[in-house]
Image (cartoon, rainbow, N blue to C red):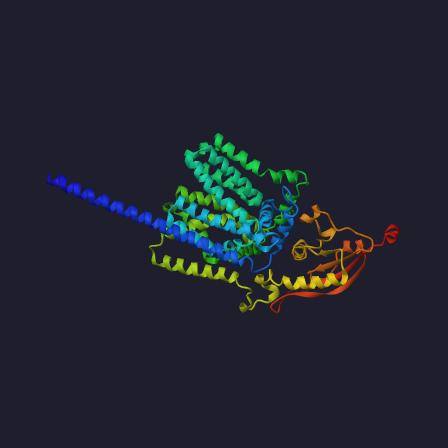
Length: 516
């Protein structure tokens, strides 16, 4: 009787202990979620304010122009970015907030998905740390404001990964279809999202018990819907001579012989360090090596993150042996690397030096991100014309100059020397048309839009930020009179950022044209 009583008491103690442990675990999860979602919400409201404090970057203005020309796709990118801006413009008109509003919403979605993906793979502590890493990451933070192709691309990359995990666990056709739809829309945002097809296939191939899914009906549905939702790009390119393929080959410098340039690889690595902060980028690379080297850190969860990271990152690393890839090209792959780094840090957090490394690394990353939210970097001795933070500032001074030029010459239209300047000017002076020279339209969307008319005795203004101050040959042929008209600086709070040279152009008279 007594032994049974002792056993019963012991069992009661264990149950009580387990209950307390579970209760503590649930409390921790709730606490971690509150902190993580608080960080995401705080980031949204801060960036909502911050998004209206500076002008558009050239790509944003260019994509805004796209949104005014609805299409299934565009010469250099998929259509999602233009569609998103069109939605924002429907609610907020032709304003900076309208252009960036969808980017702000995507940032909330990406933050929630990073947390959800990390919690599903590991636990709430890893999920919280993943959110903190993303918040401290320079390119993730500034990407929460700018409406570029990276915002929707990252969101749909993470959404596809989350849905894929649901699909392989439950193997329900609905999840496979939704995964395919998400991947297809992600492809319409940025072509790098197609790498997820390879990532998912590699992950299933590595596990014999899941390899059968590659030949299943559900996986076929996944591939089918991925293709169906990416159709706009294929249809548009089929009708426009596959111009996007030529652009991508040119963009990666793959139209020439592949020659290894070590300096280009160094430049690529430097961009990665600056884009993601030294702590996060080096930490991710070390985490990848640790998982590959040590079986103790190898699991289906960590290998899933490896398959999400390695294909795209290695591809751009390989390209960078010839010509350096841009820092933001790897942003989708790095999102999975951030979750992996958070997991490794949580596993090793009991080590004293890891605690110091984590806290100091986060502090440095947040500091680097904070610098991007300044008006300029003059305190570092950087000249205004070289300061990246001043590039989207000072356009109000350009608007004043353009207004004076319009009053004096009454031009029928403006011409700028490249698509970036033309897009910025068009957003500034929406009452006038802005074009680029016909001989410079190749590889741009301007080649598919109506160009400037050559009217009898028409006047046009040519504006260039090309420091060589040379006119394109086509303008010399298209206009009979070309008069230099000096120039002006784009200025912000007394800082001279960029100089613009101005010419007055007059068209050929009809008689002279027939004689030639």
